[in-house]
Length: 99
Length: 414
Image 1 (cartoon, rainbow over the protein chains, first blue to last red):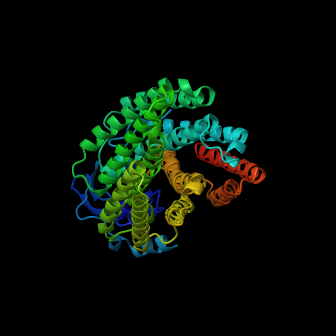
Image 2: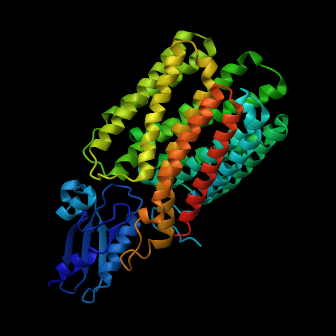
Image 3: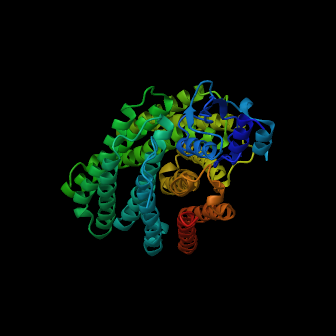
């Protein structure tokens, strides 16, 4: 398993506590950049600007990736472009919302 | 006890102080209603014990909870930080002291209520100043700013009119304007401040809690225009006594509210989250009640029966629209605040509970269902002047409120 897949797998343990869906299935993770030095930069969004959980979720993403052994440093960028929309969710995310 | 402010989020001590005070005021007001409630059943509304209970319920509970919620929601809805949190804590202590002494003085000796009334006014003015400074920093004002800003102006006018009433009572002057000012005080306080505030924040919270996307916002402008015009025309009718204007004002308020209900239903239809949380569902039910009450008030006005039933109508407006909305949203806000305090630092490290798991959802539906039933019992007891039914209904309602307060406090044990 490559490092990006490991990161994505780990991020599935970070849940939006309001929706009870992980950030990957919710489609919040836009981009994962890994440098040669194993420094990780994650571009992510939230379902709505001003989401009161934004500090909690972005810190959760950082803590989770920092816990992966190969990773050296982690930077999380919260971006609003492109804006989140439901089509960014995975099928599993959609199923969870319709339950 | 609480963590420090994380970035742009509000220090949760601030909203919590308001919310905990409001729960204490709610429980106390219910005990007072049990003691003096038969006076309402006999049709006596304008008497010191009822003024005291009404102000403890409206100022101590609803206003304080609205202020606490605003300290939490303004940064969320307007993407801006609270101007000065330290000032917010001072404002809390001034307002809490003001409301406590004001309600006590209304009960014990209304003629001396002016000074604690001024202390309450200072607390509210501090809140208005805080919000004005906060909203000023908003980068691009929108329709939500118009709703919340107008609600704050209505709150200022309500307090000003309330103090005018106290002055008139003390000085024994201006009796010819007393009724008009009293009606304006009620209209601006209930339909101006609370309704416009709930409208404004609903436009942020409804899409957030239902995960709605791709809905139109054009209707919100019509809601705002209709409701504000309705308020203005009704106010004018109070002073010039023209019945036609009174009806026109209420008609516009009804159209404004109906447009709001319709718009919210459009937003809900666009939701991704199919199964909505129970407390949120009750906040939506409150919109239905609000609409029904506006319609009933309009019909009563058309058949010239409104004056006879104004008391019970206002009672249901406060309980089934304002209080039910606030209670519904409170069951969402309090778990969030406590979750942030207790678990936000653990997310991504260990398994943390969801917000839904922070409360006992099974108990919420029976509590709120009982609340609605009990309000109807009291409503009909007031209409038919049935003291026994009123006492039973009010007793059950007070018990429901106390269970509600306990269930909210229980969240803090999770």
